[in-house]
Every structure is written in structure tokens, then in C-alpha cells.
Image (tube, rainbow over all chains, first blue to last red; front, top):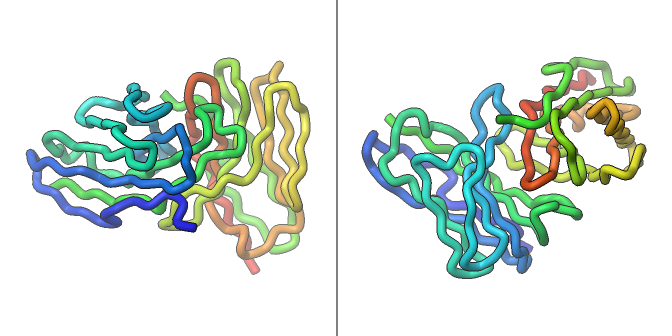
Length: 114
Length: 108
């Protein structure tokens, strides 16, 4: 039982480069979301999706794009990487936004922008 | 902006002691959840308490919720070295927002 799978685990980008962080879940969860975690700030919501074809912005959406073409996949795209986007990124999924049985998190992608 | 704020930021106790962490939040909620994060890993869901509940238990965990004070507490009884981790509260209304966490160290 894989749960939530994130790839890659580590990535170094140069300023201005673009890349896609992958997230896939095999639990048939409708709700998926992306968070970034910075030291001393907890997790901040970037984007979320309540189902295939539906996405919405969270607290810190600038510089990121998402799409949800299937229930299983929710990729996060960095359009033009900046040093301020150096962070650890977590993908999470749940049956619903309210997470009545909790969210399942991936193991994270550690991104460094130089 | 973050919704929940944990207190204390760091807590160090001896194995066998109880650990209490507090969470305060600002707006109305649907439910409040607690998560654990071991160093370098993802978050793991521990327990959820709904806005109409006041107390919940799960094994060595006890969570309370006071909606009038907009606060919650997580009690871990008879702590073990394996409980060493960061603990986050997360409030759910339109979406899920996390606090900055409490770093718990349990010394053997």
C-alpha cells in the first residue's frame, strides 16, 4: 500500500529554471493539496484540489501552478524558480477537504534554489 | 497566515513523564487535528476532534478542545523516547491550516 508518493525526494535548481514536483496517491482520495514547510513556520497551503478538474489557491500560491487531470495525480509546477522557493514540499490527500479521517502525507521533496 | 499557534515551541522531558502541548487558533473551525512529524519525514495523523466534542482519547493520547477559548491541548502520557518528534495542530474550516509546531524531546 503506497499511500502518497512524491518524486523527486531532493532537487537543486538554478534561479529561473522550471520544474514539476510529482504527487500520486492510490487511495482514491478526492482531495489533494500541496504544502511548503519552512523552518519555524509550520506548513503553509499552496494549492488544493477537491476532485479531478478542480483546483484552487491556498495561502501562498504565487509562483506555482497545479492541475488535476486524474484522481490519482496532482503535480506542482514551479514556473521560474526563485531562492525564496527553497523549502520542503509536502503533498497530502484525503477523502474530503475536512479530512474527517485525517490527511495522508507524502514523505516530501526537499528543494534548493541557488 | 497560520491559523494555529502551538505552545511551547520546544519541550524536553524524561521518559515516563507526561507531555502537554497547547494550540490556540483564531477563527471558527469544523474540526482540529494533531499530527506528528519525525525528523526528515512526512506528517502522520494522530487524532481528530470535532468542533462539538470536548475530549477524545486514543491510546496514550488525550486531546481536549475548548471552542469558547479557541484552544486545544494534546497530552501524551507515559512518554517514550520514540515519542521524540515535532507535533502540529491543524485547524479545518475552508481548508486545513497548520501551526508552527512543538518540538518534543523525550530523554531516555
